[in-house]
Structure formats: structure tokens, C-alpha cells
Image (cartoon, rainbow, N blue to C red; front, side, top):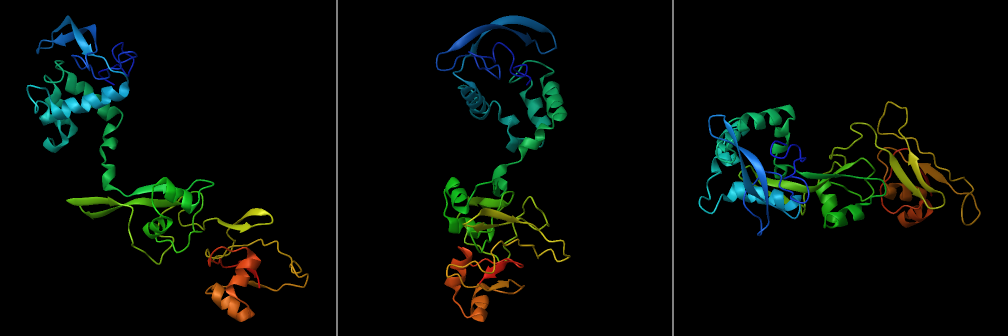
Length: 297
């Protein structure tokens, strides 16, 4: 912002791409421009100088980091006083750079003003100190998300304590990289084998409200089932459009409504049928049941 006039200066613009006013040349490329210097007492004088010319902003950003961290050929520690490890606040860094990186005696004041006005300290958070997450988008599957982050579906399920690969929906937040260790020995992992009994332990866009449940009906697309108006937030209304006489054999089919505590095994036993038969009749690809769901048996 300060060095380039918000990226609009001739030095910062194409074809020079020098965002930080660094003098000299870059891979033999430079551009000569007029500039003002401070004599150390606030008095300005004009000179012409060669400034580094970059192929793109990428090289400009990388070269700036290299200069601040690596210094110059004559003094590798020249900017060490501005490193976060050697400061207690950004004001220490801006003060140290004044008279070293820039001759402008008001350089620190200008930087501090920008930092405070635009709350730039918000970007000082080290993302490596936090778990990395991904918000499920429409059309995502557990497999597609796992592929995106180069992991197996089992790993993704373990990271999020999921008992079934069907428990995802648009808006749900999944952990894709987890922090392990302590403050002095932090490591990133997406290979956690940790599991939990709470499949809803990961925060999501629906908060404490009942998340939408999507059930696949091969004959009529995907149906969205909404929360009921009952006080029991664990119960949902399921609009199942299977008719009582809808079966391959033409005979009347029986149905049951899933109750709290039911499992697909207990329902199969009570109905005198098999788990596989229930799955086939209802187009289920997992053992996940929802309270209030109607199943053909």
C-alpha cells in the first residue's frame, strides 16, 4: 500500500511489477526512475536510481521476503530487527525498518497508520496452529472430498468421527487436516485414527438445528426431508411416496416406521426378513436409519 501507492505507481505497474521499491536489478533486469530520499532530518531530495524489474508480482513478493529474511550480500542480518521472532509487536518492526529499509523518517508512522486503519494484524494468525476444514458443497460426496485432499474416505471419516459415509450434506464443515502435539511440537496430520461416538461433533452451518436429511429414491431423484414441528428435535417428518401396493410381485407390501432405538437388524428380525432384503426394497446403501423414516419390509 505504502510503497506502491496501492499498486498504481509506475514502478509497481506492468511491466515492472516492483511492489516494494527495491533498488538494484533482478536477474539482470532493472528500470531507472526518479525517486525522493530523506536526509534523515525530514528533508527530501530527488535522485534517479535503478530499481528491480520483475516478470510478475509473484517474483516481487518472493524477492521481498528473501530480502527481509536473507538480508544483503554484505549483511544477512540487516533486517533481523523486523522479524517476528525478534519483536513484541508490529510497531517494533516498523520502527526498525525506518532508516534501514526506507530513508523516510515517517515510514513507521505511515505503516502503522495503514495497519491500524485496515486491521491488518488479523492476518498475523498462523494457520498451521489450527485444524484445516472444508465446507461441503452441493454435489460433494465423501469420496470426492477425500480425493480433493489426497486421503482415503476412511481417514476422512476418522478425522470427523463419522460412522457412516452418508452423514454429509451441503453446509457441513469437515476437518481435513488436524493439529496434533503441543505448542512446542506441532504437527499437521490427515491420517488420524481417532474415532468418536458422536457423529455430529464437527460444527456446521446448521448449528444446533436439525440438519436436512437427503434420501435417495432411485425412481424419483433425491428427496429432501425437513425437521418436524415436534418439540423433539431428533424427530423428522419423512414424506415417503411408496404406496402400500407398490412391489415387484404385485402383492401388498408391509411398511414400518423407524422408532428411537431401532436398528436395521432389529427391524429385519421383527419383520421376519433379512437386512439385505430391507436394503434392496428401500434402496439403502448403508445401515443408517432416521427416526420417523418409513421402510418397506
